[in-house]
Figure 1 (cartoon, rainbow, N blue to C red):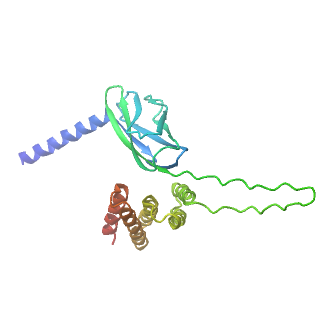
Figure 2 (cartoon, one colour):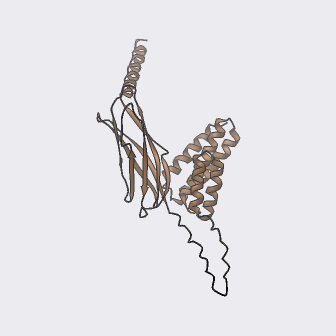
Figure 3 (spheres, rainbow, N blue to C red):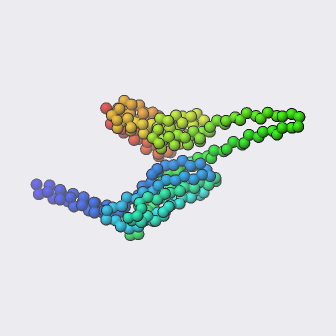
Length: 257
């Protein structure tokens, strides 16, 4: 009995130490942590700090592991305790930036020496070229050439992809899947597109599961796993984000009745 009480007392001391340590520290996160940006474009995300209730130091932000032709700027760069806890992150992608996924480290450094790291995933996509303007032949003195009818160009896969991302961020996951499918028809070997489709189905599965719609949730998770498997095959099984999504869906499926 004395041994049992000693263990309980030790656990209580450890919990108190953990709570005390958290109160004198901070944490950071990026939202959204994955963004898609065309070459030659810019986009924004946000870094949020959560201060412990006894932590009163200022925190400076910086980025590391930046690839060539990708720039990251924080506004503000220094987060002052008691004034702000969110910094806007502007990502600038030059036209020469390499296509594909880039993992960026964002580090918060407290004035007391404490540091915490969070990750930002940047997917650089090929820029969409604007079609040349329609040229109308000027009329001659005797013959007037009728103007050619304006032909609306079909959307590229990157345009469908971008529309899908916008709908995904708004929570319209079914609409996002429809856009991703149209993009996949044009670029069937793009692993990132299959991964995005997988995450849209994953979100629908989580929503159905939360609303106790088990059968619908199972179907969505299975559709997500199919998409994640395709992304993994196309990337020679070197796609951690797709693997994480697949593992999550398999775990949720095993927990459903």
